[in-house]
Image (cartoon, one colour):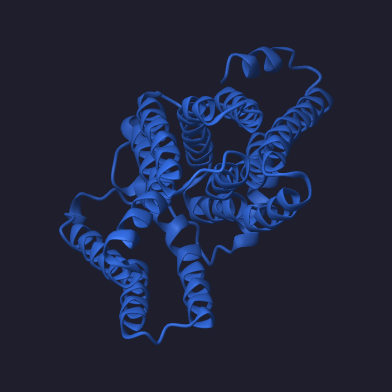
Length: 335
């Protein structure tokens, strides 16, 4: 509730300064930095909170829905905000955003706290490094963390790559770019609904969705025309949603309650940490080799990174568990 209030306050102040005409680029940088700090606390806390709301039987579906809504907002938010900025101006959009946090705070206040499920907690303080130490003891979590870092850094830069393709490769305007964003969002919605219907998160789902997403991204980068790209974008959106939902669900369900918040902090760090650096590389690559290079390179990078991570994981398991011949079959079955 505190983090939601702080984010709403940031949006409110930025909206008022924008309407007043006193907003500067450095002020926007400062607000973005502050929002990042608050989000670093809000994201893992909100994700771990799911375990206190539902019972174990419904846990995976609840995590999937929570992850789907979060990642869907990442895709839909920029598209809707762009339309609203064109209609009413950026200042009013920030104010609308501030009001939306009030809805969230109200929903939290209306929750019946006596019905929440108490979680087992470790005595003493649990630090972020404790989360990393826990992950190191679990090869399956190490694999998922590594895959998240690579696929997120290489492939999850849709806002940049789509804009570059629309403008540089096909010479399109804002209207066509809006159709591209809508097409991507439609796929994301379908992907979120499919992910929520899965009964459990598996390594197979993480690996297959990561590789499939890389392949589709590569194909989009080779699109011969705008129409072909428009058809492929829903598939990319659906696979992106499947990947992010599967990874988040897997890490939450496979972690212990006392360290779950720190584990989700690591997840957030890997999901968002590498994206800004690769976004800069995509911009440089687009200037040097054309807009397609960002998508093609991102797709190849996602595929190669995931395959190498899986090969290292398999080699490690074969070396550390030579007396367990059934583990390879269980991995391929998705357990």
